[in-house]
Image 1 (cartoon, one colour):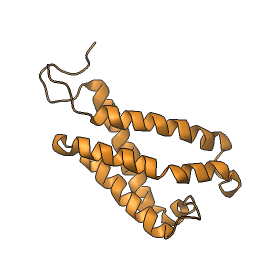
Image 2 (cartoon, one colour):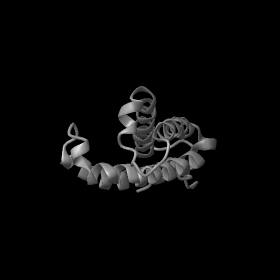
Image 3 (cartoon, rainbow, N blue to C red):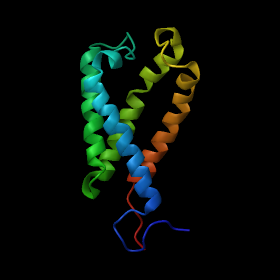
Image 4 (cartoon, one colour):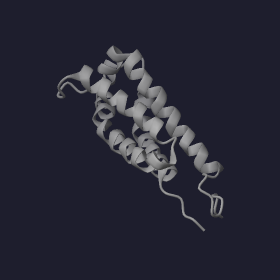
Length: 135
């Protein structure tokens, strides 16, 4: 069953919900990079230089990507940007998972669940931002 409207450029309900999830995830996350910069810097692996700069740049890209998916002409490129960004921050998620003692405020199960959820997020970004088939 095709959930997109035939011949329409508007996303169907499922895709709209996917876009909403992606938008909220990255918009809220992007803001957090600026509001909670010091906290966000804690998850940057020590092997990476300039943690403050990395947090601020990734936060800016999260906000740009979130805004980019709202508009049809920029949706696909913003989606690919968010996919690349999500892959790029994977070392931070792995660092947290490998060093749970540094993050006592986060339950270990949440750190473990974060990695497979990241795969689901990647799938959601890809699916909700891919070009729609026209019938």
